[in-house]
Length: 190
Image (tube, rainbow, N blue to C red; front, side, top):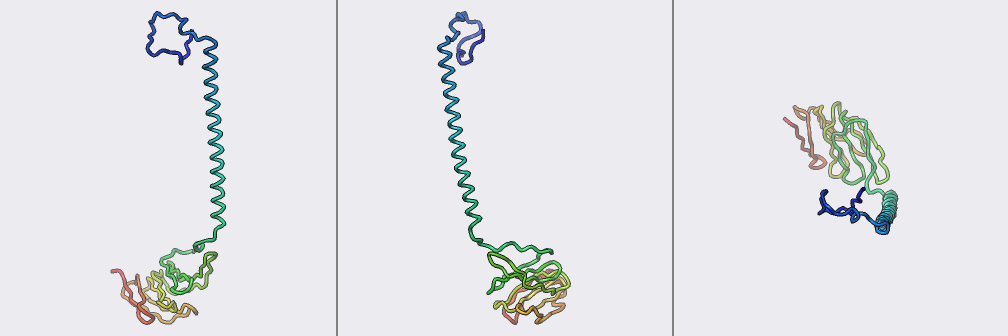
């Protein structure tokens, strides 16, 4: 005879002398036990369906939120991708222009907005890696320095060279800072 584990008495032992008839479950009691198990399973299935419906609703909310974000206006310009490694950048003080100095000695001027970025000019200024680019306070002149030891002042509007200081230092120049339209401070690493 096999006993149902639900009717197993924890206090009983194997060598008990109780009558096996006490452990037998009537068909009526078995029906009650089976129906209560079925009811529990039905309740669990209904709870799972409710959980799935609520997760479907939340997924719909998530999808709606994602779509709403895609329709929002951009709050930043698109990325600028270049062929060469970027060494330094500088924002124009008055206009939506960014100057990008790269490893081959060029300076790229981009005009940017939240919708697009446009390449305005590519200026091949230095023979070696351009290390710093800065605008003066008015944004009229752009100063650059490079590994070639030169410091250059360039007109932003025309792209023409205003002044070139070749061999400005004995070592390559790393950083410069315009004090005004006529004075700059430059530095190198020893």
